Length: 267
Image 1 (cartoon, helix red, strand yellow):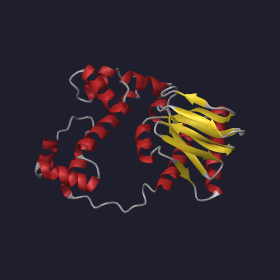
Image 2 (cartoon, rainbow, N blue to C red):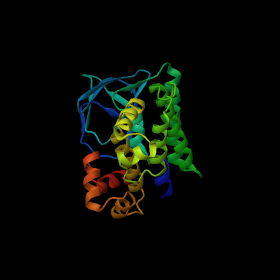
Image 3 (tube, helix red, strand yellow):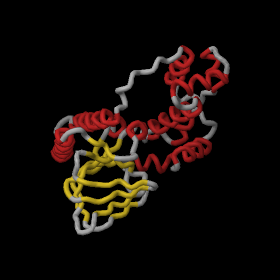
Image 4 (spheres, rainbow, N blue to C red):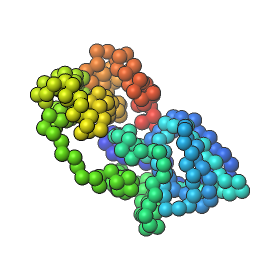
């Protein structure tokens, strides 16, 4: 149980063969699915997107909360290999990595790394040696690290953060469950309310409101992943006036209510 709350864990793993279209509704499975094409060609249809699938040095990461349809090309069998996984912080990872296309690797050796990682995960979940949960967590983290490198998430020079923005970031991240107000943060930063909003947007490339919402939402997901906490207790920790208000806020920002999110994370 502790491993489920703290670590990445594999929900399913292996190969799939498709000779005809295969449709899946949204939220039919939990987590995210990372896969590559072993042979054949086809397409993956997502809401508003169409990804071409082929056996090239690339892989695809799918948020399982989205509906999807696999379409093998005419006369071809589409064979994929991958694993479905979940864990705390998955939404933040999906946000950072993005799910709007393929991850194109620079060489076949990168694909070999992905293939070997899947083989290692399969051995771990099949044999379950002592400490296999941690080893699986490390393996998935290394794979996600490669995807971050493909996206060049950390290659850009870090921006110089002005002192007022730095004070705001320090305050919010020190207490992410608090219902922060922009005027309150302006006082901490010792700048005007309008000045803080403009400066924050220019430096962080998102509005102060969006940052506060995203930070609190990440904290909500993390707390909901702990099944020892009732939804009402999560609402109290996040300083909401009631469970119903928290549920409305969560559903408004994610499209699902807290109990559905908790059930999908558990499954």
